Length: 214
Image (cartoon, rainbow, N blue to C red):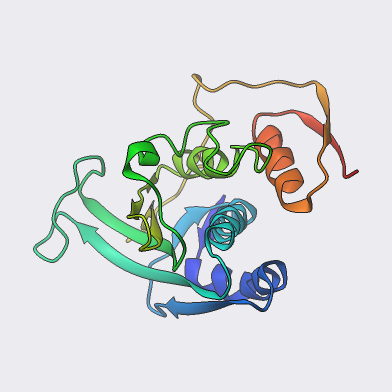
């Protein structure tokens, strides 16, 4: 991991996202230019973006808009009160919002569980949001969701901001409670996006991947 400017990562990656999403959905950027850096793996930040943008695309019927926002906040100050699950401190928020169908409150608390699928049977893998949650945790960050049926969804990702960039920053290591493997896994999937997400999730846990579409 290294000092990373999140707005720059988004700006460099958005062309790829637009090619994946297609022309029916507009991606709008609201990127702060004066953000403090975070300690992050750029490839994993791109994975977060890819997963959340694909999730947003799948929630939109017909034409719609996905908005990617970056902003710096201090959780716990007068403008941004403390949140129950996020400790006070300085954070950079990477937020993806959509104009899609929204999420039923009855299942909203489960969407980050591995293999929990909100799509119809046979569609999706249930690994996209679970992969995002794993990556965010590895970055000592937090992810939230605000959504109502028919009113779209917003996924803010809170990444600890480095206010003193002179300090020596150590790599974030995997926690001892996480599961790892070293075997080779063959992943077969006929859609490129789920294939990529499954392979990425398994690689995060140390597996060697052979991926193919059918």
